[in-house]
Length: 486
Image 1: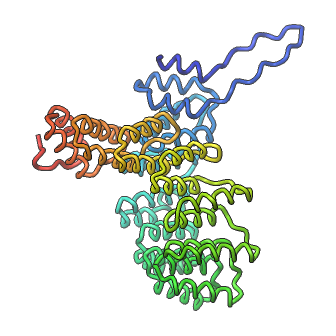
Image 2: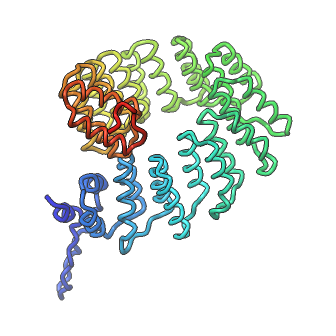
Image 3: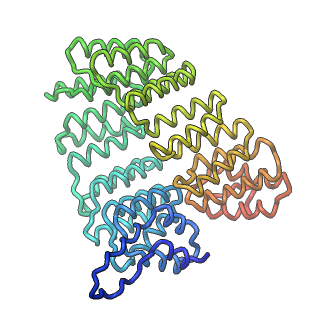
């Protein structure tokens, strides 16, 4: 079926006849375009002209629909950007600021910085930005790519792109640095600019959290004391950051004492505080204490959140047994809570770890009643199938992903490619090569180790012709190992 025929399924638009003297009921409006159908059309469309025609034949484009499709194409960056660019010439639709931000995020994730800044220029010429959110996206991608110094220059040059820095954008950039484990760099920047941007409690909380993420709770306490000396009052968020920092660093005794001090000082303990302690005790193997704190929370009139149940279920899966975790899952349902993706992922991982793969698949199917399976859901199942030697079942899950709403990501491909070397079969190594080509086609950059491993495997099994194809692909992606240069 060609693209024109596929398009007819999407449109269903008919010209109404001229009204007669007899009043007849209006025909029902056409169904809205289906994001899944459009996404599959884009994925399979190899002819840009036909694809453009198909996309332009849909008159009811909305920013929400475009963003939904971009999210579905998230793990196929080149196709997502192709879709965004082709829609720019639509006669009646114009991209929103949110759609531009999605496209910029995808381009920056692909490290296609030329396209990233081209989109920023288009955004500005359309008078849609760039906004502080746009720069938060860009700087986060540069930092995650190991270009923190470049990210800093971009933050400092925001005003050159028509977007003035303010306290919110300053805090956002500090948060990006801290979450990437660059708390020292963030703290230095904070000390330089805190006067200019009039740093607030949120600024201090971000820096304290940055040190806690690096398990440096003494440094976080110093930040808290400094905040108090400057006349700012710590908030409950401040205390919860430090509480979580103690447990994250494995300082269980200190964390519990800090929690008791919070209660003694009449600080209002909330569900976040209790959830932190429940999870902290559980990770340390103190399952009984974890459950006791959970019960204490309920007794104190603090309602558990879905996150609290997730923490307890995760604790039971890891440190107790999955059967007890399922009991808590059922208790959660009885009390009217709706499990989210994290809940299901924790249970599914626990079932897989216990060797109950059939039950894990049942939960994966059940999950669709409450939320869509995420990339983490699929990757967990694929990893455990591969660990059990069930390569064919892992590939079946991959096939479901390619035909569904959640495309494979870098981890998916790395798991499967690694599994192809276990049985040392020639056919498996051919599949590894095909997976490598597919991941590059979708915008992922394999490590040199992955290229070299596939190349070596293909050559050792007599697949020199395919190895040469992989070799040419590697030369396009970057530096080539000396032993494989053509």
